[in-house]
Image 1 (cartoon, helix red, strand yellow):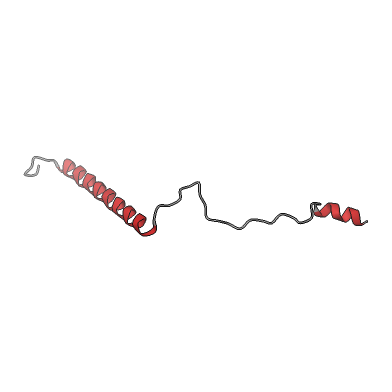
Image 2 (tube, helix red, strand yellow):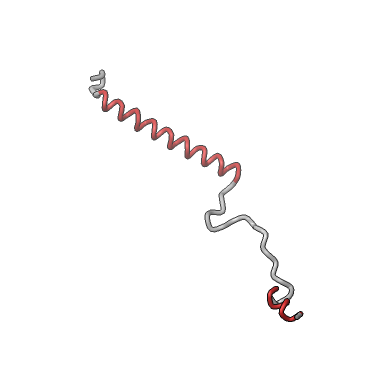
Length: 70
């Protein structure tokens, strides 16, 4: 036992708990800093603008055009 009356197992558990708490605080600080630099993200439902395929100018599909020319 240590001078505070804790067993080695209790001291090890406290060390692990404090490490986890410190890591969580550091993660929150880093997240806040990134949000401050880059702003809020748009969330999972929003995506950046992507190119879209153009619609055909001719309403007939290509296989129908060939049969007309015959």
